[in-house]
Image 1 (cartoon, rainbow over the protein chains, first blue to last red):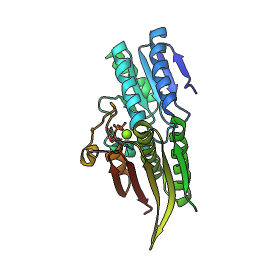
Image 2: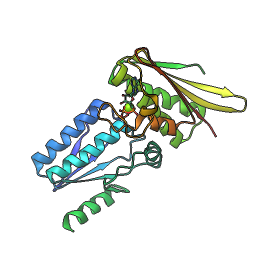
Image 3: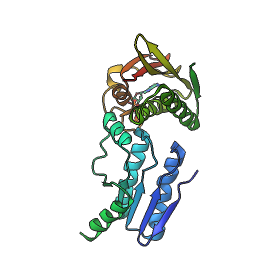
Image 4: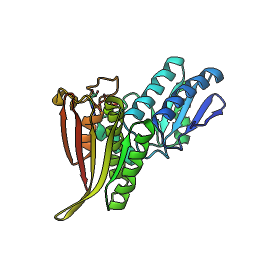
Length: 118
Length: 132
Ligand SMILES: Nc1ncnc2c1ncn2[C@@H]1O[C@H](COP(=O)(O)OP(=O)(O)OP(=O)(O)O)[C@@H](O)[C@H]1O
Ligand SMILES: [Mg+2]
């Protein structure tokens, strides 16, 4: 399965709507980097509103996507992390330090804009 | 309610195991936060089996004791086993380039956690979450 990546001007928007198996997560990582490269995107918003759990593997993949995109010159913001997911991640000791987040897609886009202009 | 067991031997069985866990956690009456905790714990245990033992089994069951109910997750494999049990329970310890968050994480996500492993024989882990 593949997660659709939408383009909005200089940004990419991704809404994760399916259960993330390992292969899908890794494919997503590759797809997003390729898309940043093809489109010359400056920012990416990954919306996790529909994701109801994140384990250590998915957390690592997401953290890596942020780092890899940064290396390529694109900023990534994670949005819509559910309360249950935030609680579980902290229980697990996974703090996602240095990963920009916002409440929802709209605020995520605002955050990107601020970061890119500021 | 009986026990549901999932044989772990592929990435897909990791998905199957956690979906089975979420279904049972819901049936027992856990809220969304504990459902996420139980699902995550199962995902960690199933992935460890897949990564380190290749093949094994995850069983999930409702448990009833005196005046409490809960969900018990059992993971078992006949893989290489774990030499230093104390070490693998440390945050950040990994032999596979992971976060090393799996086992210590499962211990914190669940209320009871028991690990039994012998080098060369395999690993058994039991974890229980009680409904409060
Ligand atoms: N079923 C198992 N059989 C053999 N060794 C195991 C098993 N489960 C865990 N281990 C060992 O314990 C270590 C710690 O496991 P843990 O799940 O905490 O972290 P990880 O799998 O390395 O990384 P993460 O789970 O954060 O992606 C593993 O690196 C592995 O060496
Ligand atoms: Mg692990």
